[in-house]
Length: 81
Image (tube, rainbow, N blue to C red; front, top):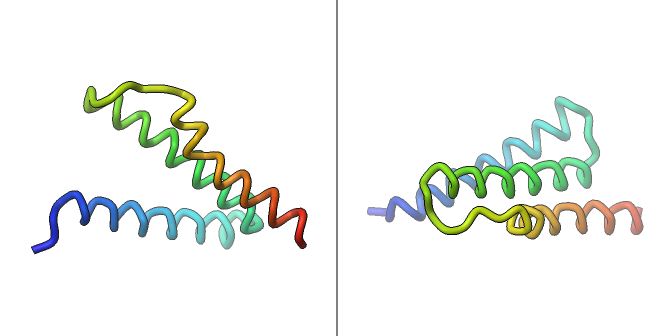
């Protein structure tokens, strides 16, 4: 049996892939923009669920830290294209 926490992480990983693919194909976004979008949405989502569950401390800088790798990836893709 797989732990519920691990299943939720797998589901979030699948959701990240689906959202990124949708942003690239349906919205015709380039990969870098899609990565920045998805990372930002996951940062916001995580802070929202912390607020909803009353777990941890909701902090906008946590959302920024979650989004930063997506934005950095976009910048690197633009620099090296």
